[in-house]
Image (cartoon, rainbow, N blue to C red):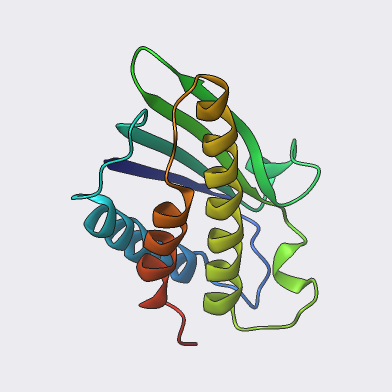
Length: 147
């Protein structure tokens, strides 16, 4: 299965968080997700496209951090999703390093995405292996869990 992670990072990230640091994390997570999911097969899904919006004006329409939109295209066997980190996320509780906080966000959002996929495909009579999906997410994000 193929995972495509695109990002748009706003200009007014809090001073404690450098946009270059977040951009580097996105690159690392993208690479890890692509590698871990490359040889995995999930019946009903060939591709997942995720647009990640981080901070600033680009995330103004988000009421909170998390999965903002999610769609399933049956003919393409493709999921398109938008994840949003609102401008207050970095300074909210719990107080953690930016790397750990970013990975917790990605883990929770991808987990929620897996649940969406499972429910959506089940309604079409397709069994989605959400356990394998969750395990692959966890493996993918483990490399970045050190602050």
